[in-house]
Image (tube, rainbow, N blue to C red):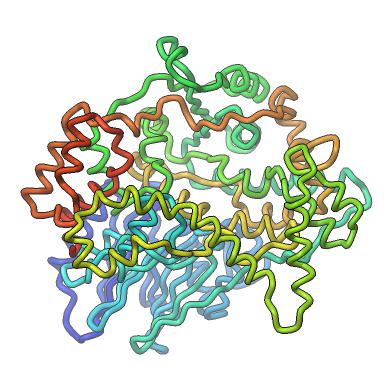
Length: 637
């Protein structure tokens, strides 16, 4: 749990410490335990550390490689394997020392040896170049900015945009698409000139030029075969325990969000097993439940019996229940959204998780285990399982397949048609039809954007070509890069889609507000690679969906949970995000924005009318967040 950032002056001007002090203060909104700083001529690195990351994560002028400087936000999971593989590495090495040695030894290929959650930057004084890398699934985020004067990078956008010389012009295409829940460009942010490095990519900056490359993708051709059925289960159990164990490291008090679902239940039970058997401590679980006064008011299935079953089965002694919402005024939510996320949270996670994280902080938790994104791969329903029969050429089983309990011939004919078309010389059928399908989905949003886009000031629209363009229908292929023709392609695309890393970014920053770090066993690279490689019969079969997971969790879960075949779609019963502006603070913030001349882009009369009539704020909540960014970060409207 860290924040890192750095600045390089391209124009030869000095880096002013007064400016850096302001940026450090703004980036320290979460009250880090320690701040490490490094000034070197025209460059600057900073590492803001939590208590568990207090060991130095910034190195310069090391005796073995004095030409290298590095700053790291990382948790390296395969440290033990690396020490065994390379004699020069020692178990006493910190994560930053391991990364630095790997870069010294392998250069850009250092990332091919790393497993974990990481974002780091290395300056090579011999080559006069900067190397920046982000982990495979984007658990750690990194942003960058380049103009004629400055190159900057940071895990949080605020570390960049609080520099007074940064161009803070908004990316209207990104903003409008975020308003209406459309997909966005993978590297886009609220600011047109501040970009996000895509997961599994690295960046090299040299001589004012940027070179961005992908360093990893799933092997969708590999299939794991065992003669003995039990070997699949044993290997899965080994990797699952390893995935959870890796995320218990460097945590003094670990919690788990236990919902009663398969993912969180398995993680909580395995964590309890490992903590009691290896570390002489226990897991604390945190579960949302329904207060007696809310039973008849909230449409929420009571998961308490399932939570109780897991707690009893795993011998968990500290199970926290959260049943009372903490009401936060709309004005406070908008301010926190702008402060913590520098814009939009990806799934309203700050609000959704608020009470749970507040309780966890009271209990002294520093690490929270999450079941996300189990559904994306490890515990996937594998609903597109029939694609594996298509890949095998087993057309009898392919056309006998069912989707959600029934035979859906059009759904079966479409992949078959794309596969046949892929044999046409020079024609990339998966890419073409993937584009057409995603364009069809995007058009469904067009009327919503046009009808509701007029919380914008019409005069501002008329005088702003960028906003005019943004209000038109946009196409961004961020779900499946191509039309998938195999189950492995489908699942690999699914877990690597933009939704995964964007939600993690939101959860990470929301938890940082409480000095807590979220960790994700279901994103362990070894685990997900293994599950992806399994034959379809291990994922879904007539006797069982989510087959490998249910079978692997038999020692850890009661059958009432392990074999459950229903799923509650609601995240929690306490969400208050869509409350009307009845407390008056929405109007108060609008008045502040008007006084600060931060409302040029807003249709103020329409918003004032909506507030007075108690409309739900979801239609213009994010517009008010942008107004707050104009006030606080001088976004250039």
